[in-house]
Image 1: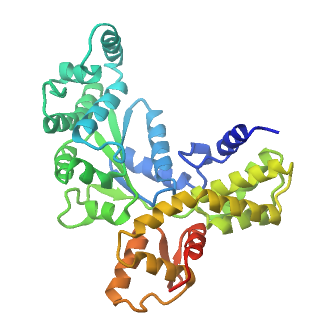
Image 2 (image 1 turned 60 degrees about the vertical axis):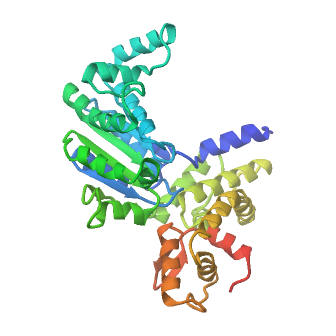
Image 3 (image 1 turned 60 degrees about the horizontal axis):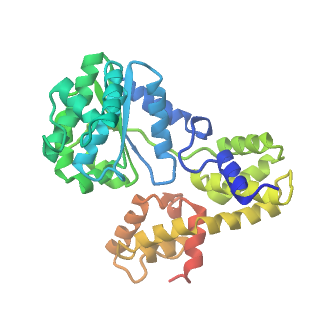
Length: 383
């Protein structure tokens, strides 16, 4: 029998739950193709979805396909990690120059020279300064100047090499908080003058993202077209699960695969996690067939493994008045407004919906993630 470490690695390689490779993006070919088509057609794109629903994996697959075409140069900024204008400038310049066809060899020589003789400066910043006359280095430019100069680089390099540039800006709603609210207007002032540069804006806070591009006084009003991320069809999950289990010599009927999807509601990360735990259970028991008993055991393990994630979500719900109370009422199917003003209940529901936790279906509010609903039900008695 494999060690726990080996088994865990194999299982999560088989059922990836983080950044998912292209051939494991179940039911997402349509949205990937649509985003790719809009970007190559000259439109910037807005993609919103709650965390853990595959948004970043979809965006990165789009970039991968673009990068296969020599006409396109791509870059990616994650604003959960990019926390200052200086850092944003540095990362954007580095990626753009590393993707350059005309400057790659010069950058490589500068990197070598830096390692051997020079300390205290970054070669990609120095090359951009030499080639385009931008001031970027901390010793030569303040943070605001470096940020503005870096924003000009994608268009300048695209013109130099007769190419197109696509920049992914992931968790873009965090840019205002991390870089300052003026960052959006500064960005727009450069973006609108860059015909060779398009952007894929991705974010998990849907109301904030839509406000950035749709509110009448928004800095980025109508700059990007929203491409909706729809739920994965149940049949697509069933086909995938049956095929994957068959690939490791496990028999899984379509009925059992559908039961797995029912348990997770087709939530991408939860479905992969459940299949991973089911695979572990099968290995432990030397099983070669998915049975109802094994599914029950795997669901229990999955719920326990997700508890830390769900604890964090529950903690975030404490930021909004009555959100936890209303979440409990949704979980137990109780009246929303009991003891609350109608506006209080409405705001709490809107907060939960914006986080992607609930949706209105068939005239009532329901959780989009059944395993999180079970978590809420287990926390406390209904009020």
